[in-house]
Amino acid sequence: MKVLKKTLFWLLVILPVIILLLYIFDYGYILKGLKVTYLTGHTTAYIDDHPQFSNRTIEAGKPQPWPLHKDYNSVKATPGLQEINEDLNTIALLIIKNDSIWYEDYAGEFGKDSRTNSFSMAKSITAALLGKAIFEGKIEGLEQPVADFFPQFDRRLTVGDLASMASGLNWNESYYNPFSMTAEAYFGDDLRELILDLEVTETPGQEFEYLSGNTQLLGMVLEKATGKTLAEYLSDSFWKPLGMRNDALWQLDSEERGMEKAYCCIASSARNFARFGKLYKDFGKWQEKQLLDSAFVAKSIRPRFEKSPHYGYGLWLEEYKGKKIFYMRGILGQYVIVVPEDDLIITRLGKEKMSKPEGEEHSKDFYIYIEEVYKMLNQPL
Image (tube, rainbow, N blue to C red; front, top):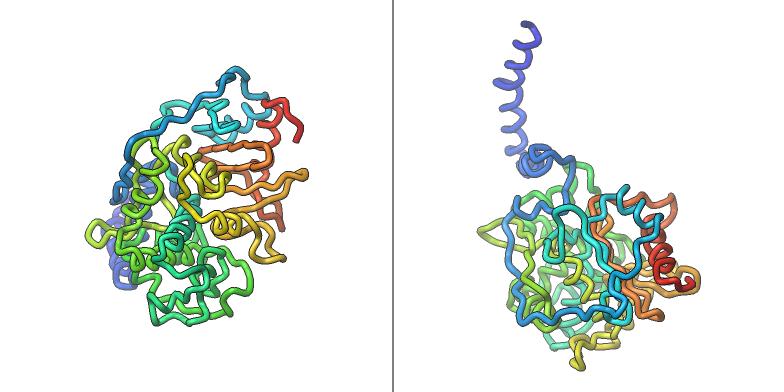
């Protein structure tokens, strides 16, 4: 009986007070976070959470189907690949060899048209939009100051600094602290206000520091430079020209003001995401049309900083067993991995990934996917 009374006291008195305090101190987004995660049986963001948010449609045009390789799905996944797929809840694995789908597999209710969260692969796509805006003359170049669009920022800060994660902004990149900027960006309702409160506190353009706020500010620059929403500009720039199989969704901070989460959260399929790998592999050319400046692509897939060889402009980089690799990645093991010299693209979507060894920049599963795919191909790595 005493336990019941304490529970009722908590529910009727203490809990409302906590909720009131959260709103008073501008932490009301935490309640949205609890609703989206714990009340749906999750402990954090998850791959098919887009129905919990407002979204803007990224419209597709006429589909351009991927060709199927002559050996399509003729080889089974290796035991090692099967094991990691089961352990990490892989929901889509796509292997594209010589621009044709060589292998694909989906788990459970997921299939070719399933839309799941890109998470931070969206950072690579937003960086591609920067390249497009430069190509079209809407932005002068990587060295254009952010202050040309938002005068309150230090004029030393450039759009290239944002794309290469070298801004010097005072953003707190913490994923599991409910009071962090990243949590507020994900569950809050005013990204623009959050970003415009940031300041440059370290010298820009000097060193790599991965901050989601960089990409969100870059998204705001793109809005101003193009006069379009990010979803509209992405549709016009890539979704339609690349012949995406279907429409995608980009999560918004709110229905009323509607700013896309530029650093995150494009809901689409493995087949669609893989097209960005091919676009960059082919240095911005798609079906004989140049969608991105080849020089911009070349710069994107090279390290900007010698002491940070793992990142270029919007893309992760690695040299593994003599092969130069670039890739897009999301927090739960969303990957578009490109090995240009072997004309190979590996796209993996799923619910979990392995941790990164201390001092390393790439997760262990990243290497396992590459190793096992090369075994499937019966090709030396």
